[in-house]
Amino acid sequence: MRIPCPFCGPRDAAEFSYLGDASVRRPDSSVPGDGLDAAMQVYVYIRDNPAGPLKEYWYHGAGCHSWLVVDRDTRTHEITGAAEAHSGAVS
Image (cartoon, rainbow, N blue to C red; front, side):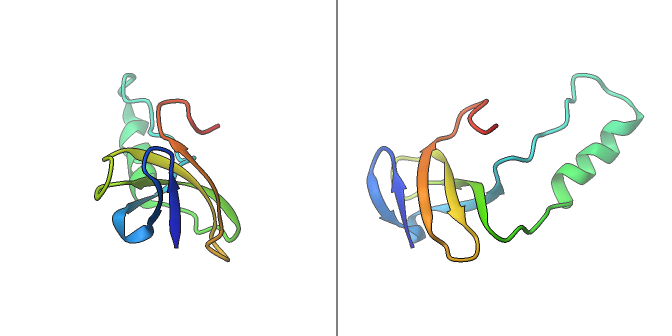
């Protein structure tokens, strides 16, 4: 599988580390309360395993050291795009 890094060009997936679903949002820890521990447990451990198109976080550790959001179909591994990850990048 080749990932199209926006900075380095197409690279083998072995140069990257996979993090997971880019649509999962971290709970707001600025408002502590009884539900924060439960919300953090769900955020860290409970994940869906969807089949089909998904936005995923990948880290280009053997290249430009950038975090990317990659559009990949989990059934076919077809990659349709990649962009630099930044806050607000995934909607």
